[in-house]
Image (cartoon, rainbow, N blue to C red; front, top):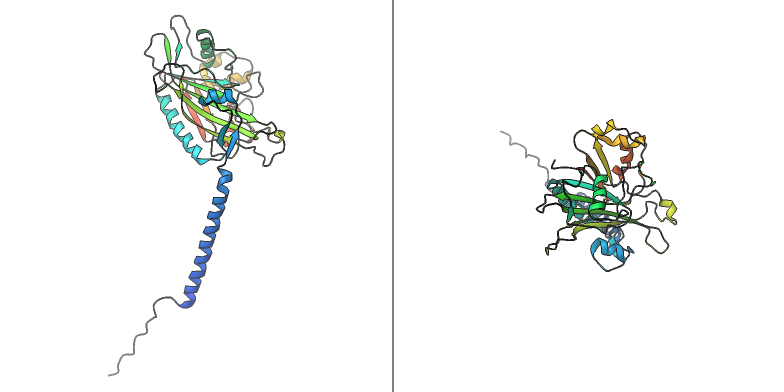
Length: 330
């Protein structure tokens, strides 16, 4: 009987050539990671740098209650500010849920009126069913300056060629005081453009929330948080403001009126295109996006007869968009 031949076995482990190849590939991968990390670290100061914005003492006092004349503001994009914007978005939605009415009013300058209550007598005063009626009411009943807010019915329907870059959103709540409307919260949106020599070129954009003072004072509402960002021009290394004159962030909101209002045809015809709300009037509202690099022009080829023409370009400038009923509780 012949013995069986020995079984051939493959030797285990790696050869020297294989080990050298693995080490070489590892060195390449690690080296590329180090280079990428170094690039990110070196670019971080440029991306997240601060700029001293000369907002002026009056505006900063109105915005934040500070006595400074300049404001150290992060430049866009800034993801820390984007996180604050997300927090403010959640708070805004909470305020809207608790509201009885919402009124958006555009401004040309900074806001100087932040009441905790507004006089209103249902017997003497009429129904406040539009922002225009709300504006007329606060001028007559609360002695608000007629020049503080603008009477405005969407783009192409105002004498101004460019919609206002500032707005105040009044969120009214249930009142415990007779003949007084309660202002649950007030949101101010402001964009300030800087073009002068010696100034940082770009926009200071901010959204701020004001509500009851935690110390218990009834008037005015106190600053309760927000975010701010500075947008550089969309044209890199621009040498003149005319090169980025198309940079903007308007409109801040669009008002959609009840469809039943189409029975009354108004002039100009562009007013009637926004009368599409089936039951309740509502708003589209936009906030500046701190994660955007700039607020340069976006394409918009829709016809002026289409309501989307008024805001189609805003989709490329921000992801902070809200659909807000004018009368959530009715």
